[in-house]
Image (cartoon, rainbow, N blue to C red; front, side, top):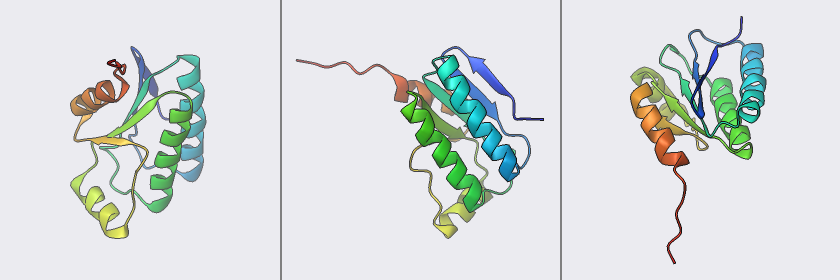
Amino acid sequence: MGVPILKQGEYLVVAIQDELTDTGWHDLRTDLVARAGKYRSRGVLIDVSAMEVMDSFATRMLDGIARMLRFRGAETVVAGMQPEVAFAMAQLGLRLPNTGTALDMDDGFIELQRRTRPVTHVR
């Protein structure tokens, strides 16, 4: 069974509940990119609070998903990273340069709103 993707207004919300296999990551990427286009989503919030490990493959996949979503017009925020996971990623030099990060889902929605706010130009 795939990872559930919920539509919340102009955003998509994903809560990764189990460690994903390589195939699971590829399926999630395909589903997210397709749904972001279908629903014209402005942002995607990915909750990783249930993940106990974030290896280099998972990190590359998350960053690649965010990059693809940005090409589709949607920003990405990763929320809920466990302290041990963040520590291990920092120790290994792993990064998520194409995503925003947030402490939890509430902060994640705030960050998505900040990232997707229309830009007003002052003349």
